[in-house]
Structures are given as C-alpha cells and as structure tokens.
Picture 1 (cartoon, rainbow, N blue to C red):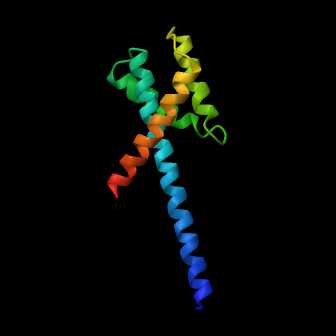
Picture 2 (cartoon, helix red, strand yellow; picture 1 turned 45 degrees about the horizontal axis):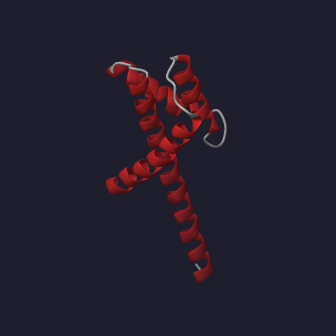
Length: 107
C-alpha cells in the first residue's frame, strides 16, 4: 500500500471517529437538555427519564438542532413554563460543551 493510500485510510478513519464522537455528544446533550427541561416542568424521575429519551428521539426528525429546540420549547410552553428561546438555545450551547467533555473523559 502506498503512503498516499495509507494517509487516505487514516484520514477516513479519523473522519469516522470524529463523526461518531459528534453524534454521541449531540445525543448526550439532548438527553441532558431533556432532563433539564423535565426539571423545569416538575416531572418525576421516571417521567423525566422518559422525556429525555423523547428529546433524544426528536433529533432524528431532521438535520440540525431545530427539531430538538422546537420539541423542548413547545413542551415547556405547553406546560406553562415561561422561558425565552434565547435561554433554551444558550442551554443547548452550554450542554454540548458539557456532553463533549463527558464523552472525551470516557475515552
């Protein structure tokens, strides 16, 4: 195998690893976001876990974060929780950092 082919395989492997890490971090962020929103909605432990799973599943509706944002924002409004879109979006940004750090710490 030539050096070019080896480098290409290495880059492909790194891309796949980075994509998997990003996917795992986003899923973890969505779970953490769901737990945060569940707390704001005063959901009990089992209901909070189930809601967090719903938030994770909502991310598969479309590419990007808007599906998750709409789910959480809509559910909070439906429960009468007065919170701005900016606060939800800021929490999403904060939690992606937390989730990425947790994933990195797991090795």
